[in-house]
Amino acid sequence: MTNPTRLVALVTGASRGIGQAIAQRLAPTHDLILAARDARRLEQVAAACRAAGASVDTVSVDLTKPASIAAAFDGRSVDVLVNNAGVAHLKPFLELSAEEWHHQVDVNVNALFHVTRALLPGMVQRGRGHVCIIGSTAGRNTFVGGTCYVGTKHFVMGFAESLMLEVRDAGVGVSVITPGSVATELFPPGTNTTWMLEPGDVAEAVHFAVTTPPAVLVHRLEVRPLSPKRPRRAP
Image (tube, rainbow, N blue to C red; front, side, top):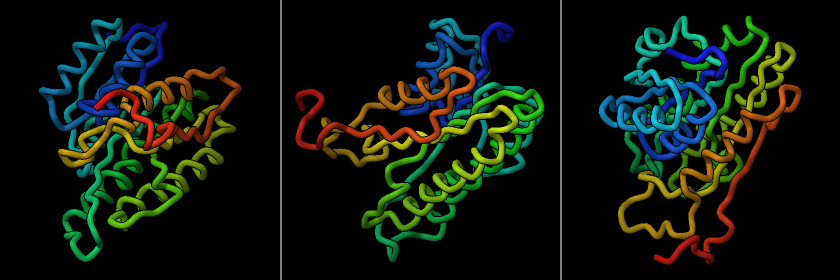
């Protein structure tokens, strides 16, 4: 059961990587609803968050299926929504299958609509809340192999700013966190990740954005590795 004196945050894609780090960073200050497909790994994250003081509810949901999202989230009341779930199939356009294209659009774009649409009305009705979206520096640049992924991240930037303008007068903030390269499972084995951000670095940015004073909004927050030539630690 949630503590009425603590805010409730819902994090998608919370079973690993950046989502797991966000959940664990918010656990000392927020009660949590953690959503992902992998119920076993989700419960492991939930156990760590409970040890940090949070009440935690886990939701196993396939974010590519609108009906599943509606069943999982309709009627839930949250103070903070962290739209973190995302996928990437990074390859040249002519090597990209239709299934890979639609998978990225379904998770990175369509799920953003369905999850936010399920939870935002309650925030507006209560006159408070925060929607935080994990974007990417790919939302304002391009690279070979990113035709779909980069396109989805450009969408995130436009969506976030438009939504911010729509709901700020209702007392709801919208933030987009745009990290550079992060050492996660996104990169294939053998990739040198020693210079990249760690998931916890992105989690710190999320915590900062969603815990500002009520009249303050951090709308865009870009977080980069200092330099690809300066490892954060020895290989």
